[in-house]
Image 1 (cartoon, helix red, strand yellow):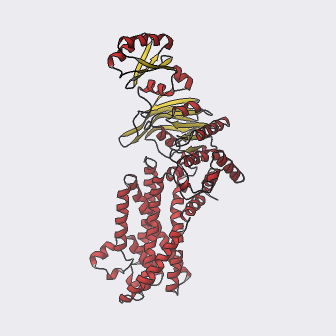
Image 2 (cartoon, rainbow over the protein chains, first blue to last red):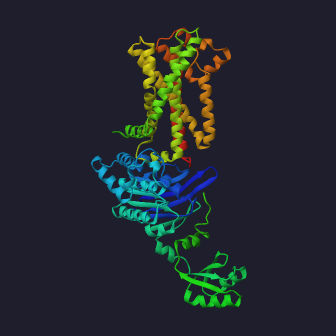
Image 3 (cartoon, chains in turn yellow, orange):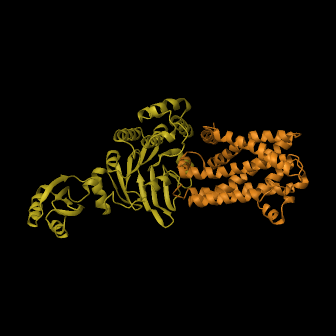
Length: 317
Length: 253
């Protein structure tokens, strides 16, 4: 049985289609990352699974329970850390967590010790006497994550869990998410940060415009891009269309993309053989190569490859 | 502790930290009664004990205010992001909505506690039954108003400005065109016909009847009971239905 399974899941907000016939599966005890830009439907999918939103059509099941008709059972199985940590302005962190623990059925005898431990691990202990409204953005965000670490549900959903959190805090949260998975929870994370996706994911689903574009492991996704290497080239002057076309015609070129006015990014089969040909071509066309960098594909490249668009430049919701 | 009580307690605790607003409400009641109530009762001679009539009217207005607040509170929760959190908790939906409605009742009880004691002691000569019946009427009216505001709150998901304007207009009209401050028999015909559309008319007259005011000044109690019951059941039912459908399908929530 899948931890999550959706079939033809569609969500419409007026004229906007947030999800379009989404078929999606999540295996038990894996970390699945939903990668996509703002407006790609990640949060909508998470809210439907958490039974906060109802789908317009299609089906979604969590551990076999239908989110529309068995919503209370679904909520007993999962927990969600929301993208926006808001509300409960005049409560202190331990009070909020105590309330959450009690509602989610954490045994009374364990509550205080677990809350203390989580507050310390997420570096919120010193802020325990502050009201929620006086916490910083990063602290408030860590409070969202803290709720799930106290609850430890069989399915834990994180919506951009480390946005507004500093690098050290990010690493702490990522380690806790892996620990949750190691203890048997299934994890679903939505993010538009490739580093976070790469660090956390057992598998990644690339979402774009409400549809699942591809789903696989990080390694397989990177390997699936035709052309094993990426060459980033900086030129002394703006790249013209003729040069770009000529580079596209070079043997071993898979794709050439303009990265900036005088920068191009080429997806090539073997960089060692391609770079000398490229430099002589540029020389012939009166372009001087200022720098060359050879890298392996990133998840940005994976997104570009499968959607034809740059992850950061995708439309904002 | 059941999840409903826990939800109510968690929210009320936040409302009461600090409890300044509650003391302010009591102080406003005291001042209004001591200054305006005392003065106006000197001017109004056609009604015996207008001071007490006014005190009950002011309590009805406070009841309306708490009922409206429950609806507004719900909208604020939606906009603050608390509502999605509450909707994600492992609680059946009916318990969540029950908690929201009962919280309005608890707030009403807190806010009216002191003004009611003061008013009842001013009136004096009351039986336990009449006091209980008048308190029950206030809560019933409070539920009806809260339900009405909850039902209207779906507007706020489209535009909070329009919602604010509509609730302000509803509040203004319902209080002015009612028998909260003046008996129906003294109202000009056009105003009196408008007053029949205000639930406050029925709430105010029924409470006054239970507290021993002259029945000649008041509406037939059977109508009042029927209207208040219809209002509470219809608006709470409609409110829950609309919210169940709208909240779960409205992105901003």
